[in-house]
Image (cartoon, rainbow, N blue to C red; front, side):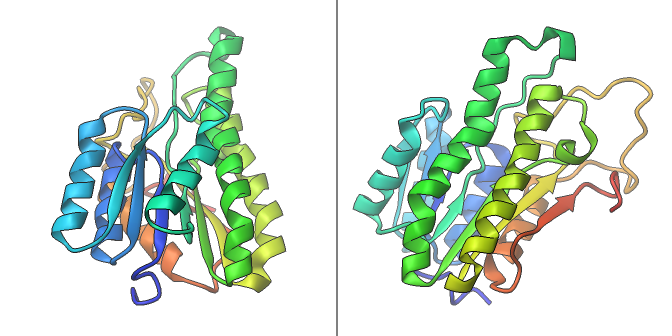
Length: 244
């Protein structure tokens, strides 16, 4: 079920992180022409470009600090110039500074909201209208179980991720009839990522007995992107930590 993704153009932010790299490799395998956007670790994003080219798939790496409100539009524009209009948007980049609620200052709050919530909205604002006009689109926001539970990173992080759910519901209902799906994926406790939190003593382990892997998040993300009947949903991936 990858044919309808083959040849499409994707913009993946946070491509140099653990989940981003795993998802980038699956996009390459599906023949998706991808712009790998990154805030740091340029070599990781460039490595994905090399892997794509080796597989005969067009790809580019794009730097940009998503805390800058001008960056989302620039990423979309440069993707379109190099690969074509964006068909698949995956705002995967995020920031998680673990703090007690009394220690969250205005700078931390604002930067968290800018990267985790404002940038995904601005990216969607730039891409979703074109998807609707062309009759095909996939938007997958990267949330967190913290949006449901409050989590352990801090109120700034939980609030930024919860805001994505409202964005999903608003957008999805307005473009579903034009072949555009809008969903969110909410993982928890995924190892080998830069956002793995320090777990307080006494917190019970994940019911499945281990932490998640970036490849498992990427696998579920691809299933969501392939499915044209699934929209307006937030799907959790947490090893049974938060049954719903």
